[in-house]
Length: 128
Image (cartoon, rainbow, N blue to C red; front, top):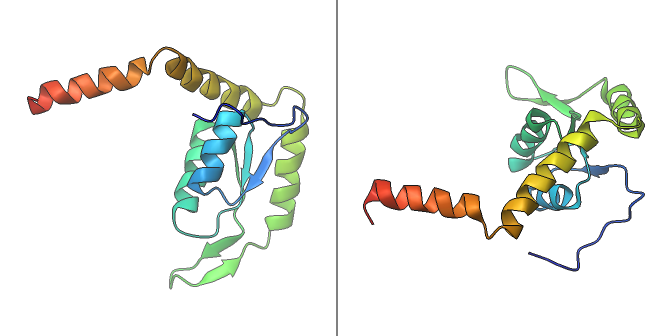
């Protein structure tokens, strides 16, 4: 774990393509995301962000029945709405990511208890 990692306390949100590293850094920093994915794992990560309630997925493109990409005609409006939502005092995304960060760091600070339980369960199932 990187101990020297710091984030300006005035950071309200992170606009990201939502690659795995960006997602991990945002969670560790406790900063909600506005995700604008454009390839590979980014779409899955952006969906996960929205499912966890730690950010907003704004689609830049959409695909038709022939899998052709088209620009989202509502992108600007959706993006502006996402930014406005992030600036609201006590927004739900900030609350959710703070809770997630605290759970992860609590597990880290307690010697990875959840990881150890998981590994012990796998060992007992596999018979190692």
